[in-house]
Each structure stands twice: as structure tokens, then as C-alpha cells.
Length: 262
Image (tube, rainbow, N blue to C red; front, side):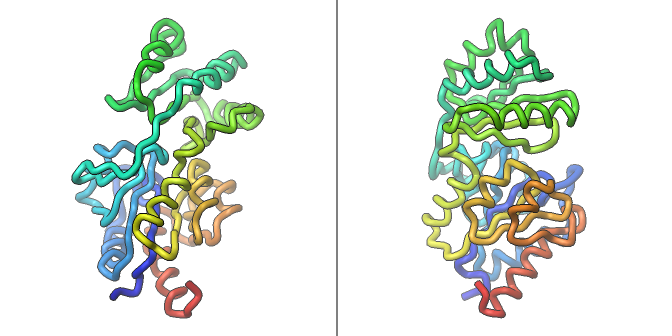
């Protein structure tokens, strides 16, 4: 029996655990302590399983990870898949509406079973859309040249009537389109049920973590997080990612458990 038995942390990667190609040693130590004391730790990211596998020298989760923004729940070591969801071809109706608006989008990325395909607008119109329709897709992302363009793109997407898709930014110039039934939050709850966890804790830094926070029992926005995420978080850490916000989260959880609050 450990102090964190029954607690599942679902943590974003970039900007939450990992920053400028590094992870603080204090973060690694805190996560290892959490797992040694019975906690389950899942990385919940827009990244592919191969990327997370390459970084297991930094932290090795002791349960399934959630990849592609929620579309895939898998054991990145063994390759075992718990759940997989494809993005339907109708997503390109939304993409076409965005492009027709005249917003400044410079690249379209399709995350499929065979990796990432990147298209300029001309390539997308010439062959990319047809190619993407013919493959299994996990998510589609749009790149803008500036944060201001990203703001305009996000605002426009909030006016679109596509409830089957979730539009969210993972950073200022990069917008993700995911199937609403396969977001981080939906998948984290499936993992919670699979593990029989009593508490689901989310950690994140950007807007694409909002669907996760909406499904968690407790949520922690790191100090460097966007205001939109901080506004819905249960807690906001004093520490930023580079100061080991994760260690602060785990210290807070231990205090709450010892006080009988969770």
C-alpha cells in the first residue's frame, strides 16, 4: 500500500513536464516517488507513441499513455492498444471552410497511422486532401505564421458548427482538430475506469488541455499555462515547468491525502 494508491495523474508533456528539450531532475524524482507510492502516471499528449518511447529515459509511465490528443490509448513500450479512434473524413469540410475564410494558414498536417503528412495550401488542394481522405487519421492540425494569426484562427473556429470536432490550440500558432469523442478528457476517464482509480488528476499548460480538465476530479495548471486553462483549473502551481511544477503538484496531492481531503 502506498500513499498515492487509487490516484491517476494524466499529464500533458510539452510545457508541463518538458521544456526546451529537457526535464528538471526534480520532476523525474517526484514522478518516480509518486509511482513508487502506488500512483499511476500517464502522459496525455498530442505526441505520437514513438516520441514518448524515445523519451522514457526521462520518465517511464507505469500505465498506458494517451497519444494524438486522445485518439490512441496505448502502452508505448509493448505497443498494446487499449483504445483507438479515427478522425472521420468530414473533418476536411471544416478545414475547407477555414481556408475559404481567408485566414492566414500556411500548413496543414495530417497525423495518420503511417506518421505525419505535411501539406502547403497548394499541395493540400492538388493532392493532399485526397491522400488524407484515403488514410486512417488521428488528428489534423493547422499552422499559422504568428500568434495573432493563431488568435484569429481560434476565434473563427469557435463560430463553426461542427460539434463532432474539438478545435484547440496546443501553442499560439498551432491549432488541432480532433474527434470530440476522442479527446484527452474522454480517454483519461476511460483509463481511470480501466485502472479502477478513485481520483483522476490532470496537469497541463495550454488550451488543448481544457477537455482534460473538464473531465478530471482535480486539475493543475502550471504557472506558465495560458489564462484560459488557469481559469478552469482546480489549482494553479506557483512553479513553472522549468521549476518543476510536477513536483509541486505531487507535494500538494500528498498534503491533500494526508489531510483526508481526497
